[in-house]
Amino acid sequence: MKNLSIGGVGISTVVESLRVPMSFAEFLPQLAAAPEVLEATRSWLEPRFADLAQGVGFLDFHTYVVRTPQHTILVDTCIGDDKERGGHKFFHKLRTPWLRNLKAAGVAPEQVDFVLCTHMHADHVGWNTRLVDGRWVPTFPRARYLFARTEYEHRRRNWEAAAGAGYGAFDDSILPVVESGQAVIVEDGHELDGCLRLEPAPGHTPGNVVIHLQSRGERGVFAGDVLHHPIQVAYPEWSSIFCEDRAQSARTRQQFVRTHADTGTLVIPAHFPAPTVGRIRSQGDRWRYDFVD
Image 1: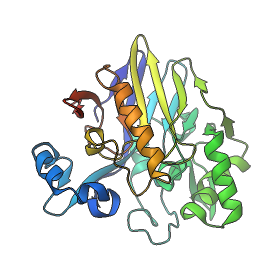
Image 2: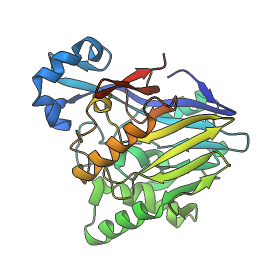
Image 3: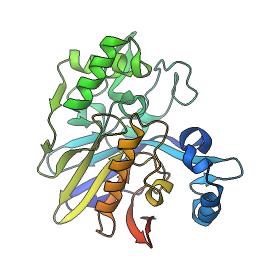
Image 4: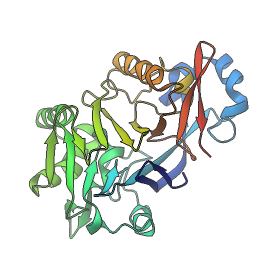
């Protein structure tokens, strides 16, 4: 994604991994079971967003750097290095250039004021911490980490009930932040810097949120995992296997698409392949996603 601005707020990306192939049959089974949809969308899915011969869609993993007039803010912190993730091939014991990429974007860890996580899946909280002398410590020593209360309480209860729940992300990426005193548990509708607002978007996880951005009459929305892949704009009733409540996730996604279609709002998803950011447009009784190249 190119650097962009929404009103007086600058947004850039810090890349962890690009064009990670995910089997449609594994992560979006409704699409894999609808070959007629794949064929009808081939002209715009390939080659940027899918390789249909291989039956895969491409996902990116990146963090957004948001610069308001007051603060430097990170939205979602990817998978992280050195994390024990049960051997999962896309998550386990990674070594990536993410931290170097953050510095190349002009941000040292000490300069981050806030970290916002749309939810607490392992690929959205990983760089909350890093491994130092065998201990997990907050990556951003001055930052306050804002966690939505519903999501935090759900993960805490799961952690107490079953050690290692959620690939162990609560242990290594949330608890060290809480123990350092840097976690701030916030309520629905929490606002930051007069331009960012958290809105509940349940389904993918119980406490999943989207983050609205409004500045100088312009609007954007950080969609997190309400949308995993561009095909879900056209078919918002399709939930990925990563959604914890697929029926609720579908309802949330359908509402999200209808709410933002034809409004000019910039949609800023967590995993769409570059150029990532775009707008939702009506197309007959469906919708399409127009990328901002």
